[in-house]
Amino acid sequence: MRRNSPTGVAMAIGLLATSIMAQSDSNPKRGMAYIGGSDSHDADYDLLLSSNSPITWYFTWSPVAAPSDIFPDDAESRIEFVPALPSTDNLDDNIDALDQLPSSSNHLFTFNEPDGSTDSGGSDISPDDAAKAYIKKIVPLRDRFQISHPSVTGSPRGLEWLNDFNSSCWDIDSEHGCPADFVTAHYYGAFEGLSAWLDQLAEWYNQSGSGLQSNLKIWVKELALPQADEDTTFAMMNQTLPYLDQLEYLEKYAWFGAFRPKEANEWTGDGVALFQGDGGLSELGSYYLGGEENGFKVGQQGESSAGSGETGGNDDNDDTGDVDDESGGANDSTGLRASLSALWALIIATCFWNI
Ligand SMILES: *[C@@H]1O[C@H](CO)[C@@H](O)[C@H](O)[C@H]1NC(C)=O
Ligand SMILES: *[C@@H]1O[C@H](CO)[C@@H](O)[C@H](O)[C@H]1NC(C)=O
Ligand SMILES: *[C@@H]1O[C@H](CO)[C@@H](O)[C@H](O)[C@H]1NC(C)=O
Ligand SMILES: CC(=O)N[C@H]1CO[C@H](CO)[C@@H](O)[C@@H]1O
Image (cartoon, rainbow, N blue to C red; front, side, top):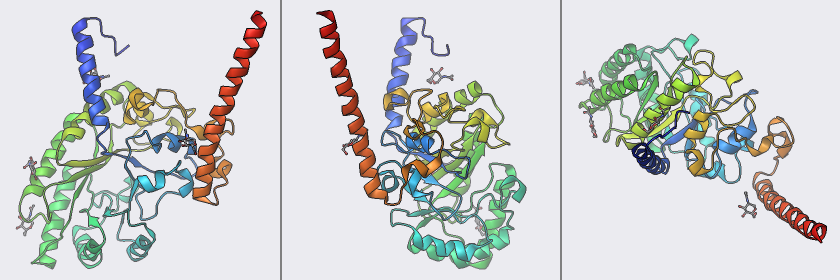
């Protein structure tokens, strides 16, 4: 209904929009916010992480990667895992855990919403404590990773926290402050608010003495419109992603969550869901993956849901990752061959029937 194009002009505009969309879909900024746990569904990752999907990176809010068995075919080696050190709690253990990661992981997120309370998923760290831990324990990791400054909330408090953090950084190390290689942003709200927040961050980080060691590079690693219905949320996504795709200093972004409605975050509400209740792609989900041009239709389900129901990774019996992946591929073409011969048999039978 929303795509009716009653006139030729509207159709031409539609075609133009489609070709612009196609262009941005080849733009590999999109990522996946992996929440996991017992509520997650393997079938959904079959779609999100398939080779047609534009998703090139993901994160877990921790230094530990997602379980290998959620990845179809060669996705685990194609899609960069970006580890995070969410808090000053367990910081040493979390830093040790980084040793387990493959060399393809070369970006690192640091404290998660330090200006936010732990009740709302923040890490509630004073700017001074954060600066101390950052300089002592995180800066040395720049040998291995591109590191980001802490990810503040997209609120006025976020910018205040950054200002205080910056002062503490220079108090502690008057020569280097708190160096960072890139910047992260979180934003929950409408497009206008998001673009204004990015402008504010851009202006702040473009000042000398922000700690940023290169040209501005922002990753919007949490992004959604909370508490809105699906149509309103779709309109926001449809306006926001093309903007982020063309914004030069905007390196990567991730929609908040890879949810079905039932499991959606309570605070955001289920309007953010990329999937429908039965695991079919929602309109949002289909759009996020690049739509029908990439082969993602609304309602389409991932392969792991076919036949076996929702048994998580169990139906894979995935003890031997690579070997199993190959046999998975072989199965697909066997299935195709089987259905081709069934079709052939049907045609033959029909011929005889007609005689
Ligand atoms: C910040 O600098 C980048 C280049 O590094 C530029 O593209 C951007 O427009 C600047 N933004 C502001 C608000 O100064
Ligand atoms: C960070 O603090 C230093 C030292 O006080 C100051 O010179 C610099 O302007 C501050 N940076 C920003 C982006 O406010
Ligand atoms: C999505 O974006 C296209 C192109 O800008 C526009 O024509 C269309 O109306 C938008 N759809 C919604 C639901 O906002
Ligand atoms: C759809 C799919 O995964 N097809 C694969 C089936 O197996 C062959 C051979 O292993 C692959 O080349 C296909 O890509």
